[in-house]
Amino acid sequence: MRVWLTLPPALLGAFPVLAEQAATAAAAASKSAEASPVRAPDTLGTVLSLGAGLVAVIAVIYGCAWIIRRMNGMTGMNNQAIKVVSVMAIGARERIALIEVGGQQILLGITPSAIRTLHVFDEPVVDAANAGSGDFARRLQSMIGKSWTSPTRND
Image 1 (cartoon, rainbow, N blue to C red):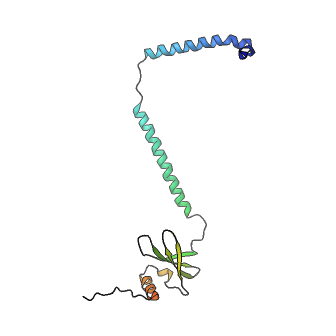
Image 2: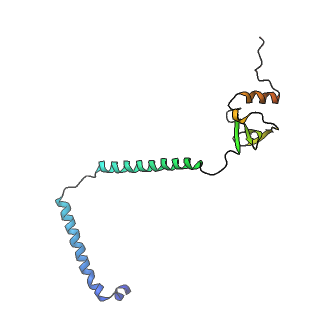
Image 3: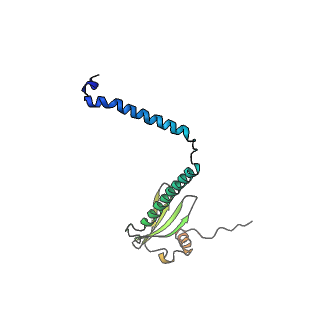
């Protein structure tokens, strides 16, 4: 009740006028709604709008992926310091890798949970420029002491 007493008298006089205008606008809106038929929603426009939005979102995702891929090469890191000379699968998820760091070759055992140094070679086992040849496996087997050929069966 105190709020009504603190309002200026001019505002109190304006409330009936505002209420009458709102009632008149509501009556006009209901008359126009009765006169015009009810329109069905524009489903084609809605589908096209949603489709365009979906295409835009997918384009943004692919654009971001493309930018990230391009930026990986621009990190400024010296990728020539470490070279992977050769990798050989030992099991389903186990591998051995020969890497060259600072002119020294290191044999690594790689599993899903760990990477371990197996051997550090004093002299290079394989020339890093010709790492594509299958000579690495033979030289490694000869250094380990096992023969490369499989045992023959004598039946």
